[in-house]
Amino acid sequence: MIKRLLAGAAAIGAVGGLGFLYYAWYPPIEPVEPPDRSSFSAEQIERGRIVAAEGYCAECHTRTDMGGGPELAGDYKMETPFGAIYSSNITPDPETGIGNWSEEAFQRTMHLGVSRKGVHLIPAFPFDHFTKMTEQDVSDLYAYLMTRPAVHMTHRTNELPFPLSLRILQAGWKLLYFTPGVYKPDPRHDALWNRGAYLSEGNAHCGACHTPRDFMGAEKKSAPYDGAVVDNWIAPPLNEHNPTPTTWTEDELFQYLRYGVAPLHGPAGGPMSPVPHRFLSTVPEEDVHAIAHYFADVDHAAEREKHDKAALARAMEQSKIDLIGPTVDPDAKLYQGACAACHYNAAPSPVLGRPDLALNNALWLDEPTNLYQVILHGLTAEEGQSGVAMPSFYNALSDQDMARIAAYLRRTRTTLPPWTDLEKKAAAVRKTITTIPVNSSH
Image (cartoon, rainbow, N blue to C red; front, side, top):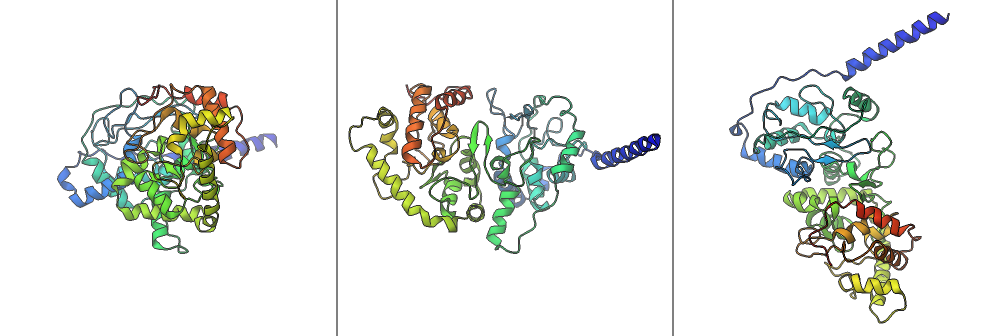
């Protein structure tokens, strides 16, 4: 009986193993001669440029460390809990890029996460979002990429430990977490909402940064857009759990995504800054409106907006108190000397370019990470609101100084419990900055 049970288990295991190998195996697709630019129309190339901008392709496929690298040539370093991963070259170089890829191979990569050679891609490449893209959009993107300058450049070797380095295991990850398929419009919503959902859930892959991940690195389907840590910044929630006292309305979202600054929420900084400034400022305005329309529904803006006037009034009142006169609070004095001159608002509503900190996301998050990042990095004139800069206080403020300012702002600008271990957390954020900002205040 025991022998029969063992034999049965072995047989089931063998069948299961063969089934997995069948599921995991993809044949290589034959290489082709790099297509001639004239084989694509100017209209298709322009459509592809828009698709590339809305997918932020250049952001993750252009090296930023080691002095930077050519656009789209890859070798961008992505830190993950499992080890560093380096992006691929997607220029039309036939040896180190995708120049000898047919459109069929490119479509398979975008929709199934499998390379031309039949190798499963690591989900740091968000094929779980790109699978929602239409064949036409992928075709247009192919046309655009194949008409970029070819760059002969390899990327560094991924630093995933064994056995995570075995690509066949990615097929197991897909079996658990990946559902291929083009986005299907939701009949309960209008065309604008569905366009926004298509872009946000597909090509723009917003959830890749704004949705928390589980221990296997997959987005938590139970917590879409609930916020996550990305590149040592906090990508805040985009749903009703966003803690700011004033609502991210459709108009605020549009202003932020198109121009990099929202009147009631301040500027885009850190990893988010390139999204409006490099990419969404260059695409059709109606697409940005669609994304804003979609997320205004996701965060239930219509239901929350009624509380905004009271929150705005409280923020303006506290801003006035800061500059009324002398104070015995040493933390308030430090804030007045370092910050209040630029962040002071006396009008009925915040002045654009002077974001009121009582309304800023950074003060309402569970951790002071983003506040510290902005204090240490500052904002250049190319970030946030165009032409308006904030100096870095990397040299001017110590970890203790930043902790005092953070504690003061949290207790006077929010109704939330105080942050803990502020000086320790300030030191931890400082350690993530490897190059002192050039706009650092002394």
